[in-house]
Amino acid sequence: MIAFLKRADHVIFKIQEYICIITSVLITSLIVIAAIMRYILGINFGGSEELVLFAAFWFYFTGSSLAYRDDSHINADMTSLLFKSEKAKKRMAVVKYAVSMVIAIVATAWAFQFVSWSFELWPTTPIYKLPLALSRLSIIISFILMSIYVLIHLIRSVAILKGGEN
Image (cartoon, rainbow, N blue to C red; front, side, top):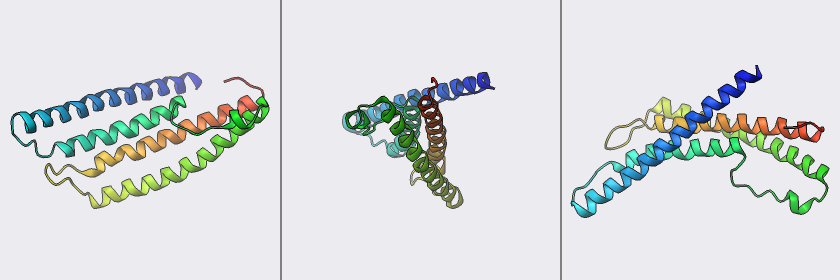
């Protein structure tokens, strides 16, 4: 079972990595093309913002879930300054991840409602008529992944507190 979970994590990680690479190249390319067309060729690339927005949603939210996976997201963890004892730091890590888990569950529930609403109403972009629900789908996928990663960090921090290893 552990081997399967590690393999699944690796596959999901690679998918997220490719999404981030592809969308970052796409965003950069679209912005450069739009700038060249508008300011050098004098042609308006109407709707380029819609395409950038789609790619940006997937880039931003996929990148966020990757940061949670590696525990490299921006945080304001000051426990190392406030606590000198290693045991206290380990306890605070459990508290931090427990609070993060509650927040992740609430945020995932809200994201689910928002994305469900997008699928019900099916709003589209003005120029290309792209369904916004498809870009917003990245929100719920990333929040689910973030919740899973926070849970993994919580379990790991509890194990470390109890004297176990990673």
